[in-house]
Length: 526
Ligand SMILES: [Zn+2]
Image 1 (cartoon, rainbow, N blue to C red):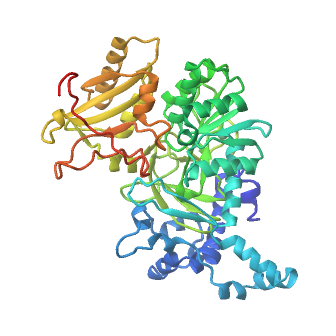
Image 2: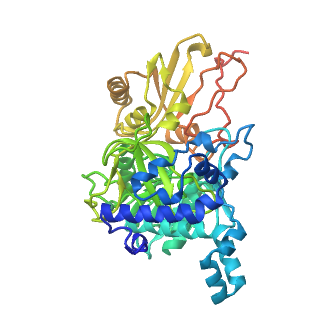
């Protein structure tokens, strides 16, 4: 079988053909690229007595141990851990290969040298948003940037974008995958794009001015940030009638926020907007998108690129691969990456509908798709939200419950201790900006019922704010990601410890600024 089929027919291959071609590509990739040039995998293959040649089918992938976030983190014993995952080519090995010799004879040594440099020399990096204290850097060669353009252009294709549209990239300008993927997707696809840098660079009003000027067809950014910009636009009475796609990334997109975004776009004069989500992570060096679907139907999942990587869904407890369509943890192995390379990377993300291969019901493409909601179990763990008011609370569930609440436009959940006393009971304060048409009484009633029914914990108080105060509270335009949950419980071990930040906020200096818990003095008292 022609191995190039995987690339030329990436969206048209049935499962069996696709998996056979993936196994073949994986074997070559391990043999020619990863095992010879990755310090980590060379040692690992040696240690386990494995050989790339023993990968005959996709099931053989199981022989390679899984890699976790912790494996990538630097430790005092391994201060340069992440570097062990960077491919460093051995010139002598490359020089001896018959293909190198042939190319040198045909095009000259300088051309071959330049080719290897393009393939291997890191010239770009992104890093994890650092839910852990130490963000992990991921390096890209020119070869990787080319793949970033290819993967990005495919997002545009899957979203059914058009080249003559105009796009604003509202992801925060930072060394994170989201902004740069959107950037390279635009150059790869060939669509007019302006990067606003998100709220921190231009502010919400700066983004709005840009929208008025560009009159975009597509907005791409984090769902909560797009929501605040569109809400602001509606409040300011702005018209923005060209909008056709809102492409979401960087955080999960609950059904509730999609509906709210559609409603806001309609108020701006764009009633026919497709709100589509993407999914990706630093370690994948790519992201995948949903294709447009009817408003009354459900999305058909993230459309994967079988030639660029292998996605598995495993049982998070046993680590074993699960059958098609079963919920489990997403694991990723690249098939054409250079720079930083991690095989069988455990994302910590749980996909509810698993991995499916049947033709997409909406666009008809035949490729693997990740179906259903994604819950970031890693976020949940680092939040330590397991016990609020003594009840086990699933943070992912809670976020869906609040995002989907009908009359709530935005929210923040604050956890604190009564009287700021570590020995006291937990207190839950829900800060809310409500839709103007609903009364406060109604919203309180609805929220209390939703919370009691679905997460068995009710907020102690619901506090209403106007849109501006809410944006302020969430850190819109100040933080890279809005703070939807803040934990202001004092640490019992040290009275002076700052209030902890949330998992959904990245470890930037700004995000680390705690919102101080102050005792409010009644006015007039000194
Ligand atoms: Zn589709």
